[in-house]
Length: 184
Image (cartoon, rainbow, N blue to C red; front, top):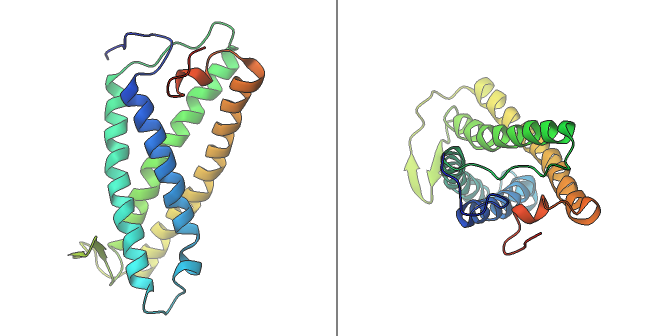
């Protein structure tokens, strides 16, 4: 792993990937939760809206993999000495859970789509399903996709709450590590 010039902050690329993916994932999750309002079931617009959600999900899935590769090759800044050991452990496991959700959510949606007769269109390009039309398998993976979205939302709320705690209460520099241009 390489270390940036400032061991107290994340590097510019890490910060950019964090915020870009964070905003994009929040938008995609909201899009997914609002699908029925945007394009009600059994309407002509439904297929196009669903395939836009799937297309964006594939792009985000690839960006998530890129982020994970980047993160694996670049060291993170050390936690402040004032941060309790239990907080460091909780942060480690919370971040791992966020990464698991970032992987499982798009992957389960993609797999579900391949066990449906509809398959998917990637920005209009037909991608033939590699699996047979099996409604039970589709339902299993689509259920995992939806459950992961709810879990991911809960983890995001906790992540934001912890970040705000560090910024507004603890003033320990943890928030400044990831905020663009902010120093302790």
